[in-house]
Amino acid sequence: LATSNSISENFLKCLSHYSKSSIPISKYVYTPNNSSYSSILQSSIQNLRFLSSTNPKPQFIITPVHDSHVQASVICSKKHDLQIRVRSGGHDYEGLSYLSDVPFVIIDLVNLRAIDVNVKDNTAWVQAGATIGEVYYQIAGKSITHGFPAGTCPTIGVGGLLSGGGLGTMMRQYGLASDNILDASLVDVNGRILDRKSMGEDLFWAIRGGGGVSFGVIVSWKIRLVPVPPTVTVFTVTKTLQEGATKLIHRWQERADKFHEGLFMRLIIQVVDGENKGETTIQVSFESLFLGGLKELLPLMEKSFPELDLKAKDCTETSWINSILYFAGYRNRESMDVLNNRTLQPKNIYKNKSDFVKKPISEIELEEIWKVFLEGEIRPLLIWEPFGGRMSEIPESETPFPHRAGNLYNIQYVMQWEEEGIKASEKHIERMRKIYKYMAPYVSKSPRTAYLNYRDLDLGINEEGSNTSYSKASVWGRKYFKNNFKRLALVKSKVDPGNFFWNEQSIPPFAL
Ligand code: FDA
Image (cartoon, rainbow, N blue to C red; front, side, top):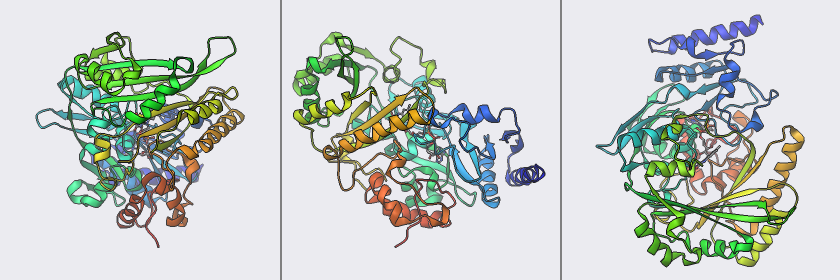
């Protein structure tokens, strides 16, 4: 105990020494002896698979309220040989923002979440610990004709979301969240604060899709706001296999990436109870946003997707901010205040995976796929999100996110369950892996690509610290980044050659 107390004291002394803020950092450091340690640790753990008491715990949790607290945290963690895990919203699918097998510190940015919206010049400065819901709320509070193209779940942190990409309902019109970053403030491995100018274009390129934490701690982003019409239209049409879902899904695959850029129609495909007792079927929901009114939408749908037979009564005209609530599952006229609730999203136990599709899957093949989904008790859910539009115009190498022209849509495989314990986990994860394996012939190949923000450690992990191998990491790295992986590794060699910012899927320094 004496030893751990003295480690604690020395670490705290170091933090106070390097923190230049008049606000004492010691008030924001938690050790396991502190009564709020557990509640802070658990506060934003989104995947309950990682909540168990047997998971490794950090020696310190620091919740900085000032940039210089972040600087001191980096400097002192390095001096004391402690690994850093950086957490903004805690939504990492594999828990990388709060778990580690070696002695570690969590820098939790929950207190750094100021948002400064400037509608006159169409920009906002957003601190990394803000959730995307808080950002949407602040924008909508200032203007009904400004928006930001990012994710659909309001509780995601902008630290992780923007540094890994950020797919959402306006991506066909405006690209990803990371395509709309203008500047950033980052604490590097030496504890320096850098902006776009002082970090240089290579590092600025890397943190817009390459995952921030391989390169430093992002403290804030400057984002570009985009124009949205005062009236948008939302609708969801749901069909089962018996109602012709397979044919419609097939048509959707041929068309969805070519629709008008303002039309985003994603599919939620799931196993549901059938009409007869004990029977199951596949149900698809065409969940959609159109950046315009009904008058414009109906003729457009008639031309581009008449088979869906969309009627005015299926649609709701509303504001952009209400479309955010709609996609987040709030469809009963909830106030936009819910967007400020950081624990709004129900928590689950889950394992997800992702794929990109370049060629429509035929109706016959879809029917075979449904048979696999309908096997057994466990019910997977799929989300298919259409690309095309702006997503196809941005070159593959413009940012680290390489999944651009040629990709029709992205598949997210979602496996959620309620039973706790290893046995239940194994059973569900095994089922997920089986489905993923089954889908191989229908999705991108060489490499079979994946989306970084739908993190999946099955794709491969780094060996510890100095043993991290560039060539081994290329196996999973090329899946997330294709040819951009090499440039990411070259940037890493320049800004963090000692590989201090290591994690199971961090970018390794380049080596031949
Ligand atoms: P978290 O804090 O766990 O961080 C994720 C990763 O980023 C970790 O590696 C972490 O260390 C790093 N990081 C976090 N803050 C950092 C910082 N300030 N500086 C440097 N590195 C930092 N995605 C999407 O594109 N569109 C969507 O609609 C959705 N929807 C969605 C719904 C739900 C319920 C979940 C759980 C997830 C999504 N996602 C998503 C995926 C989401 O984009 C992804 O999990 C993000 O990385 C989460 O960012 P957080 O900051 O919340 O996570």
